[in-house]
Length: 372
Ligand code: KG4
Ligand code: ZN
Image (cartoon, rainbow, N blue to C red; front, side, top):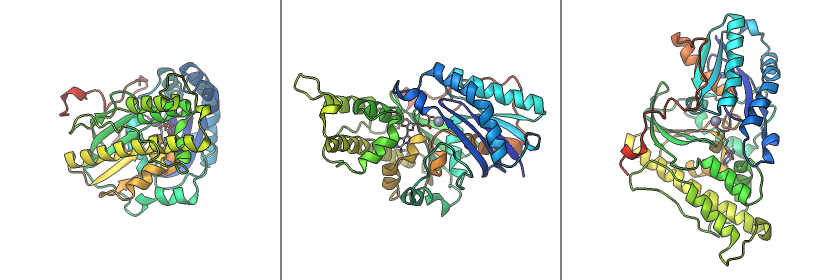
């Protein structure tokens, strides 16, 4: 048994979690900053880092208390130190280093994108989850698809679909990951957030569009599916977003606002937009699976909570692994779990660990070298 305290502060969620042996989540505390950023319709970096400073100590304290443990019983301190907003990352990294130094415990820096992929290994529902909505039964059915097959088979296609990333990876095992495709413009979650702003639906856009899409007609408005070249594993979502904008504004020279649309028209736009996103994602998963001869698909990140996507992939020809809903969006449990691999291997980080804005798996990738 190894107890790892994880810390998350890459973007706008301050998280702390205690995970036992890389799998059993004893606590998962997330202080969301959604209300602070909602009026700006996106994350404001300075506001995010200031809120992390205020939240970090209470959140760590609550994670330790809820786990029924004490700081001196923790075996290692893990922190997501890349990629993210620099001002946000620095708060979590500084807190983790300080705890590691003061307690004399090993420090383990993890890659946040890697942790999103690893989150499919967290099979249990959280013991406590102070911010995220409790999933309803239908969500839970979709989210437990991985309970039947508890370990993904490799090679696997990994997909991180979030507000900051839309990227595909070849995963040979959880310590050998290679980037094989990425967005050339907006991330898919970013497109959800922008379309939500166009429709006057608020921030973050994913959950609200996902819900509205259930009531709309996906065939009422046909938005473009951008697949880039025939073989390309890259993504582009900015054309889709612009096409929603033009549809909402109307083409008759006079600018229309979303408020001029009826509720059912807005639901139809949400459903049409979501259908286009899902078609593109599923097409790219198919291409990537063929390219690397995948035996399974692993999906993480905020957009992996999407009900339409989960329903579409229920019929996929390979086993598809999603995290439980509470671990789709940013959280510290996935970092604590991933750090267990390093802990077992005795790979620790020095106290000089840096906050880094780019992912370890993106550096060597050049989209222009990939056949398109
Ligand atoms: O992984 P995450 O918490 O943060 C990043 O690392 O970016 O992802 C947040 C993103 C937001 O863009 C949000 O709109 C999107 O995930 N999201 C969703 C859903 N829930 C959250 N997108 C589509 N459907 C959802 N149900
Ligand atoms: Zn994330």
